[in-house]
Length: 284
Image (cartoon, rainbow, N blue to C red; front, side, top):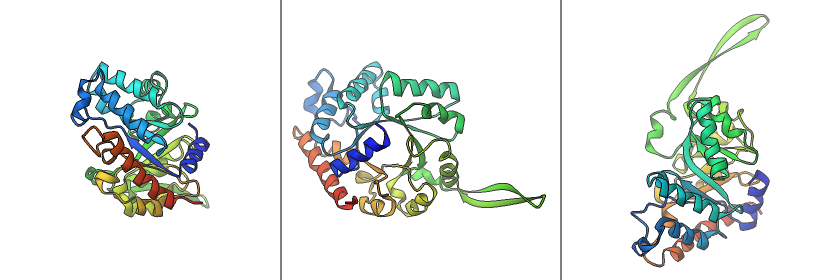
């Protein structure tokens, strides 16, 4: 799904909701455990009940990889079942030396045809480049995350040194900024607004205006609303662009809205609440 198609879906559905399929086998309704593939049956019913209310699904690969071969099969079936009318994200947070990243890109863009993958940028450009070489695929780079550990590195101030030439004289300059700011400024030049998004956590609302100054037109994948307490209203006010520029993810608050047999209906009710609120914030 390219950018134009994504924007069209957002305004057609009046929604920028992405639903996270963090489908923990220990949390799905007990009556599904008798199924041949309980997690796939759970995902299938969640998708059926919400596909008209969202523009994407984010599959947290850890919940599938932990089950071994069967988990990978469930993930493959889920991606196939979603189809190509939604942005399907592999929340895999990969990133390694170039030849290894090339294999990760092949795994998640070819073997399992995801539309996008989350990537860690801290090994630099050569670790991200293989993902960006795929046409009509998205690389979603970790920018400023929603977890408390963001304070350990992302929110640390660093000194950036540079050198300019003024009338033949080399002048050394230095500036101070957060590490995440340097990551965004640097990584924005690796791709384009057509193939590169950034993960910006909803719990970091105070930083959103500043972040939009650094990357004014890129799409953001925003986790952290719902169970983590981020404000959809605040994020939308601070970071929305004329073509939206946001994919706001909700996982547990939607998919685990009920543990009873009505879980799919409960998921739809929660997704509808998000969609209705998003409709009120989108440009008309």
